[in-house]
Each structure stands twice: as C-alpha cells, then as structure tokens.
Image 1 (cartoon, rainbow, N blue to C red):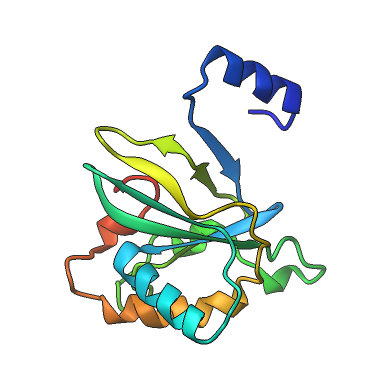
Image 2: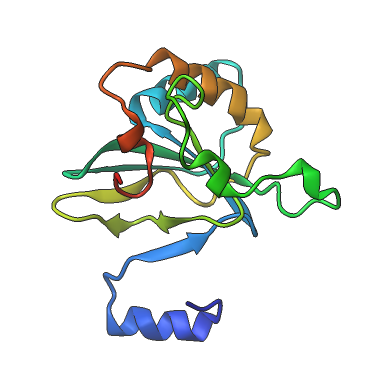
Length: 166
C-alpha cells in the first residue's frame, strides 16, 4: 500500500490492468447500495435537482450488481461521538434495519474503477470522478428510502457486502 504517486506509476507501468483500492474515510466516503435501489435513487435525486458526485457500478458472477455513490467524508470530527467506524454497519442484524446500504467510511475501502472482478465482473464509472464530492447526508435519505423499496426482492444480507458476498 502506498500514497506515493511515483510508486503507483511504477506499479501501473509493470501491470497496466492492475486493480487499485482506495481507503475511505480520509478524503471520501462511499455509500454502497444494490444497483436497482441506486437507479431509483438517481432518478429521485435528479428530479429533486440534488448534485450527485461520482457514481460507479459493479456487476459480476459472484455478486448482484451494486452502485457506489462517492461523497465527501465525514472524516474525523472534533467530537468523536459524531462518527462510527464502517464495521458497525457491515453486519446488520436484519435487512429491515439496514436494507442493503453500506456506508464505507473510516476503516473500509472500495475498488477504484475501472476494475475487474472474478469471472466477467467489473467496476466502472457511471458518473465520472471529475464530479465534485457531495456531502453524504444530502444522499443518505434518498438512498435508504430506495433501498427499503427493494427489501425482499432477490436482495439478501449476503449480497450486501462489498466487493463480494461473505
């Protein structure tokens, strides 16, 4: 792992098709939802004229599709009671509690598009990384509402994990 741009460039020269991950909770967070819920949320956010940042999609043989909404990070606030580590929402007790949403914040990571997943899977940009990162709270309610509509429709807790099911 590195944050050194020269080292990353060296790795890319050695293997131009390598996958890269990015740690969340430092510069950005990612709200990760089932792809159907993500599409519905994008429609609703567009209709409400809410600025959406970069969005990626994933698909593959080992998982159902996911949509990744990149946002500004909640970071490390002065009041440590205002944040939670990603681990707290990794293992929901029921899908009713957390219907397919995972907030990748401090302590997590995501694959950076473009990336290949096992089999024919891939992660790619739907809305590119040149877009500004929105505050995650501007997206959260719409994403959770959209996820709640799909509870019980071929989405289960095992497919909610990123990048592949447990």
